[in-house]
Length: 308
Image (cartoon, rainbow, N blue to C red; front, top):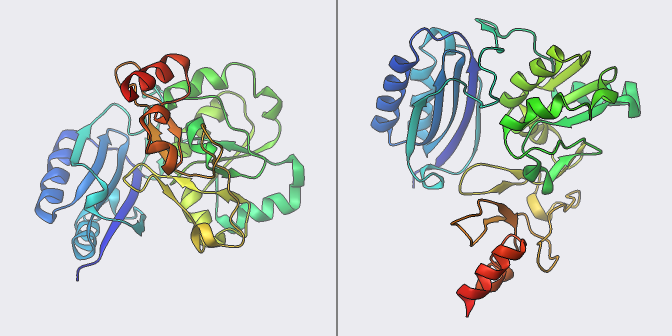
C-alpha cells in the first residue's frame, strides 16, 4: 500500500523568467501525479502539493536542482493528492497577494529588510526574557484565528492579505511599534512579507517564526504557547498537533455559530450566489439545510427557503 504526503514550501529568490519556471513545474508535477497549487513570480515560488510519497521525494530532488531553490525547506504533513481538486501552477505578480509587489525586495538570500527569524525554542526564550512586553501578531486572515492562535495574540481585522497594508496604516497598532512583535502565519511565508511591510511602517523590533506555526507545533505540540487547531488550505480544513483533539493539553477554541458545540470545521455559507463566507458549523448543524448559513439575516432567509 502506497503512502501519500503533502508538501508545503516556499522560497524568496529572484526569478528572471517566471513563465519558464511555471511550465517546468507544471510538467514535473503532471509527470509525478501530484496535485495542489503553485504560484511563481519574479520574487520566488510558493507551493502546496500532495501525492505518493515516492513522487513527493522525486519532486523535492528535481526542484532543488534549480539554483534558487537549492536550499528551499520542504515541510511534510499527512494527506495526499485527494486533498486537492486539481493541479494549478500559475505566474502572478506576487506569490502572496499583499498588493505591494513593488515594495517587496528580494535577493539570493531571501527578503531584504524582513523581520529577525526565530526558531521555535527562541520564541519561547524571547517570551521568558521579555514577558508581557512581547506581542504576537497574527499574519493570517482573522477567520483562521477562530480555531487556533498564540496565547494573547493580536488578531488584525482582515479578510484577505490585501487588507493588511490599510490595517497597518490605520493607527490601530501604533502602540506596538516600540515593542518586540512576533509575527506568525501557517508556514512562515506570509510573515516574510508582512514583517518587511511592518518595518517599513515604523515597527522597530519585528520577528518571525522560522517555519511558522507548523514548525512551532511540531516542536512543542500543545505544551507551548500555541492554542487550538491550525487552519489549512486543503481538504483537511484543520490540523492538530501532539496527540490531536484527544491530547490532554489541547485547548478548544472553535465553536459552532449556531448551537455553540465545539468544532474546528469551516463550511461555506449555503447562500453561494451572494455570500462567500466560511463559518464554523458543527457536523449536526451542517447536516440540516436551515443551519447551513453564515448567520446573516439574508443568508438565513435563503437557507429557510431552501429547507421548505
